Length: 342
Length: 182
Image 1 (spheres, rainbow over the protein chains, first blue to last red):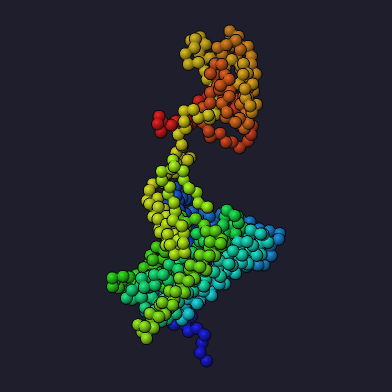
Image 2: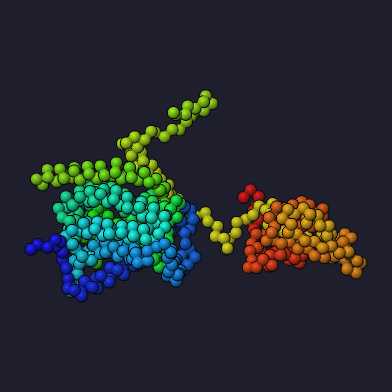
């Protein structure tokens, strides 16, 4: 009997546990950095300083935020559904961390003589795993909005549902072209297949579509209709406060990191460097982190630039422009792959 | 229906009509232009004036907290006579009804002001004051003027009732004044 998904490479169980802890710790460290970078950069792009009071250059601002949020009261509206209300942020955070696990920071390295893959798992269904957890992550938003018992939360969650359905299709189709070209679904395999040229160049339209869909997927500006502060107060997290709000916030920024990581892996050549530079293996994670940083900067930059789309604009953009573009891209790639390798 | 400009309009900048393909292309170009703008702003210095350390300079005619004045060059036997003669015109002019003046007679032993009477009690309730400056206009002796201080918040309302001594005293911290042409 064949397995549904083959894991490409795995280590002893104790290495797996250590890796899980390391990945979670790295994720936890990245989120405050991204949060601070966003607030500082947004400030500079709007000709102001951003946080600069707590610690040197405001570097301890995320810490102060966390302390403030965690020492707050855990409250919930009387109309909310208690169990689901508490569960929803957990779902969000678990799926975000789980999606983070498949981002490869490097190939198999020998650390103290033990071969260790610099990723959580190298599943043979990489993008599918990502989409699976992306779809579950949506339950975090949906449950949170629904169980709050507030109309603003519910509206935000409904928008989230429609947005996710529209954009996940294009996002998937954008990756199909890459998968055709690489001939594998394993993310490490996809990186290895980019030795000659990063997929950003041959799959430029796929890259663009994936990027735009990624913005929508993480509910970031200009597609942050789910939490449109102006009309929906705060969307699905209107009724949340304290630690639960912090969980949602954490998941949101971790999702930004994850999408940056996936774009890095799939389109920007992962740990590969251009011009035939082959650094020693320990440099690989830093190369990946650097590229992820660039992508995260793009996220922040776009947030500072573009105004929020109207709901119908979002829908027509998703279905009338992105989806045909992604389909066409997949189709042309398929034909080219058949012609060249046929 | 499109708007047609009159003869006096020399040039009208119109956005090109958005089409399916051209509109998308144009939106892409405009997005890049916007990104360029924000990136340029990022390299510039922030315009923030970091408030508690640096204050925004006020204009000379800024209406801040009131001041009561003394004569700088009065009779040496009675130095620093107050300008206020306790006429209560400021209290009458005040639309917020926040000034309270109780007048008393000057005597040769106790000479406080230049006139016949002086203000024994002069109180301004700054929690009611709307900083309109009518008191300044009403005063016949320029005894009360609007100063430049605007940091007057306090923890209790009773602390906001400023007495004559507080209004006569020089403010502890000076508010920076805007220079000519600034």
